[in-house]
Length: 413
Image 1 (cartoon, one colour):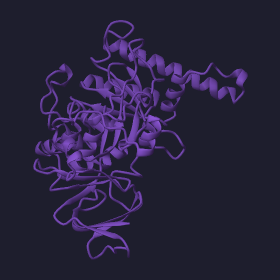
Image 2 (cartoon, one colour):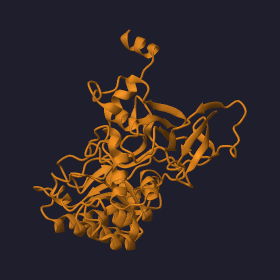
Image 3 (tube, helix red, strand yellow):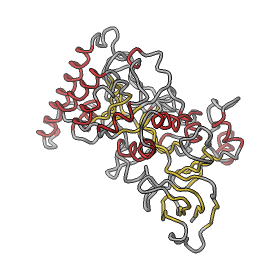
Image 4 (tube, one colour):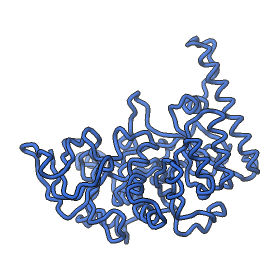
């Protein structure tokens, strides 16, 4: 058991605490509250964090760390593809994300397809295999969504769609097929002789239709955003709008549709025609409209180490400070359906938190330590860790495999 004392604590679930106590045991938070009013259990190791800030670990709702590969050029819609089978857990971007205070991330395939495959919601624990980073849901399934995209990215030569209209038509076609497949399975009532041939893509889309898998939908222009809204209402699937460069134009429509937003705040939108109307005030506009939104990096579009800066830019453009911090933590936890475990400092939640040298939105602040499930996974005072925060030679090399001496000895025999 460890008790951190003296720090300013930003629990997100309640008011900031000027001098607080955070108690963790094993992988869970035991207590959080003001000094003097929060008992420290006998025998707990006490860590003096005076002068520091403690807040929940950051949740990145859209990332590509680990170089995930989704669908190929054989078809525009590939729901059977899993990034589970294509992520390099030794990728240095995992270390850079931990150095940034990111503890949970939605790792996705790219947006060059109408549907590029199944995403993963990961805890950024150090590990030798992707299995060590997975988040399991109460029913035993692996946590993740379904990546879709519209607009310019998936428009290319046949067999891909050449127009926005054709893109939406192909989306409708695959969802109608998925509905028919699901109905046939239900009608068979377990009788194998009546079941349709097994189709992994249709099974994955059945989870989407049943509300068990959320669609993470890349979309930029206002008209493309409206297309996503129509599709989600037509087929009754849960969707999160990603990027929304022109979300400020249709903020009220997004709010009416009750769709959450995973927002990127970029200070230089050059390079993508659809992002030319991106605005720093989008977060403030969405907030005023009543839209649930969180920030994401789309790493490597924005380096994970700059996620805190995105929230700072949004505050500069009119977003209230508390909503900015919420958008880095609890909002994204809700967007990923993980808010019972992460996103705030509360008793019973996972012990995912970060220690900062100062205010989280200040450009002068460093992430000093990152903790995931009660284990420190980044330490700024350790030169081997600090290189991932500061950069330089070696900062982009794959991690050394995390194996012990006995395993290495066995491999070399």
